[in-house]
Each structure stands twice: as structure tokens, then as C-alpha cells.
Amino acid sequence: MPLSPEYREKFNETAAIEWFRSVEGLPYGYHNFLFSWIDTPEANLPELLGQDLLPIAFSIFEKFDYNTSNIFYAQSLNKKLGTVNLTIAELADEAAHRGLNLSEVGAMVEKDGWKYHGFYHDGESMVCSCYVAGLWKAAGMFDEYTDAVEWSPKDVYQVAFFDKNYKRPQQCVDADPDSPFCQLRGRFRMTFPGFNSIEPYKNMNDFCPSIAPEFVRPSGC
Image (tube, rainbow, N blue to C red; front, side, top):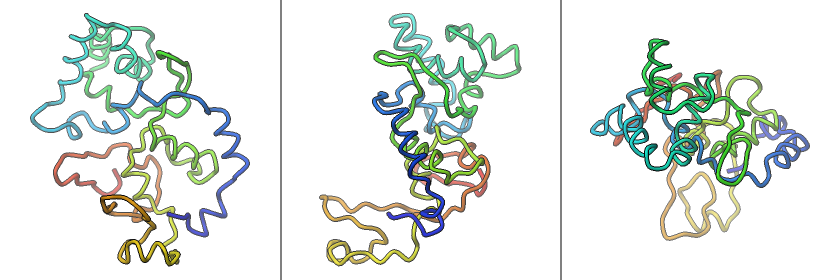
């Protein structure tokens, strides 16, 4: 999936390499893994589970393993509320004082550059797709319009950064004549609905629902 000429021109390779070196060696972003795809209080988790599943489940788990519960759930909520080391019950109380519940706090937008404390390493926390988006942002492709740390794989492949006129090498055509990108191997054919279709905009993907099985994405969310 090569970049379009416009975004190849924007891409600052020196800045991208500098950013990569600054985060090289960080572990996978388990601190905010859950929040990279929770953008709304009620329209991301499966409907049968309900918006209160995570607060209840982690408050129970916290009694048995505080550190793990803190790393996977509470640290991010503390970041969003601007608090430090509050337990889940204390976070719920603090949120209530502000007229919020923990599902609403969880849907708040993560900010690039937040530092987390974890099992092995302190630093920024990014899952794979956020890492790609972070590199793009460092390279100058995002301008100032969004944070990258909540981007999902779907967000990465739907943004209109790619070359619509890409002429694929013959071996790519031979492997899959109908694909707009190049997949040379694999038991399964990769599909990417909405590939390269959404022009970037401010706060892109920050408030998107994702309920199965349709995974409808409203325009401008």
C-alpha cells in the first residue's frame, strides 16, 4: 500500500527516523489497548455486554491483582481525569463528582505522548496501528488535526493516504488480480472495506461507534 505522491512529498523521513529511535524498544501498548477502540460510552462494546462491563470486571479483578488491573485499566482513566494512582472505586467517585461515569471517562480521547508505568518499561503506550499512525504524524502527514494513539487498524487502512493509481508489479497481479494492493502470500485473502476512502480531518476517528456485525462508521465521527 504505497503512499500517494502528495503524502510521499509530505513524509519527512529524517523526522520519522528520529521518532522511531525515541520509542524503539517500548513494549506493546497494553496500558491503553482497550481504549484504542473504545471511542464512545455505549457504542463500541457488544450490546449484550453493556457499558458497565469493564468498570465492574476490573474493580473485581483489582482486589486480586492491583498492579495488573492498574496497568491495563486504571492508569489510563487516571490520565484522562488528571489524577494519580486512584483505585477504580476512587476513580468512579471522582468521575461522579464531575457528572460522569467510568464508561464516559473511558471514551475520552487519549493524548499522544502520555507516559505509562508498566511491567517492564516506562514510556508511551501504543498498539500496532497507533505505532504506524504515530510514525506518520512524526513524519508530518497529520499536520495538527489529530492524536494518533487511538487509531485502530481500520482507521489506518481507510485514511486516504495511499496511491489510488498504484501500478502493481506483475507478481502482485498474478497472486491476486482483483486486489488494489499487493498480497503475495497467505492462506486467506485480505480484504479492507473502505480502503483509502476517508480524507483526513481534525479529531478524525475520535468518536466512532463500532458495533458488530455492520460496524457502521458515521461520517465525521
